[in-house]
Image (cartoon, rainbow, N blue to C red; front, side, top):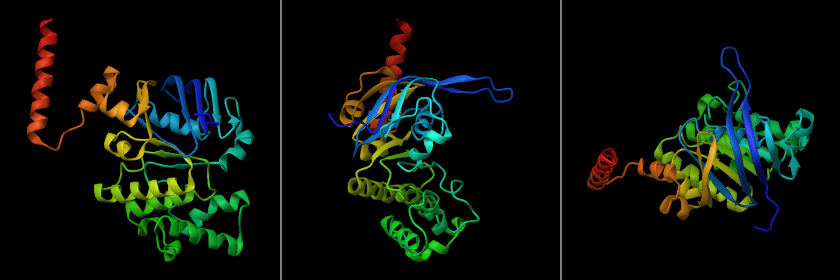
Length: 280
């Protein structure tokens, strides 16, 4: 791609500092990844592989220890809080838990409008109008602006999270496992909505998930993480249908099949393979 990348990791390493009795440790290293305008990149891997770490670093919530991290044209490799302030208006993040990411004492209309108000983008009637537009864009009635988070379902709260993340029309959106707390039927509509918004607004998106089926629906490209390193990158077909790395192959093989006969056949093949390895 000849366009300028919205997000670029170049040999990035990320450390977590010492906290109490927990020693410092390296959460990710040798990270090389690019995301271009209008593209959704799915970041997959098992729990603890470092997916969320990359997502948080992408929006400046975690500093990097080594390498170069460029976000919407800003090199934030050694940025302080003051340097990150302009970046906040060009990036957005949707958190995993829609309930805890919203202020329970604040009506959702105020939560959605808060980024606009703090950035000086709108106030008064203009702010009210923008909040109504954002609610409509995520298919929520404008009357919901006066409701509190506990009055909404999980899917509705996650839509509020999207509306708030898109309030400043960011160039980069990080979605950190946004469907993990939702029912399957709610997940489907949520993914359709995210796809529609992304195609219309053309923001770049880093979609962090452990659900390969969800990533298969959304992502243009997929990156696989294992123990803090990116082991494989490619298109959906390359990663999900023709994986090359042994870890990716094991990850895909662990996904249960809906057909019991096919699942049993796979289990028997895996057992036979392990038995032959043991004999060798």
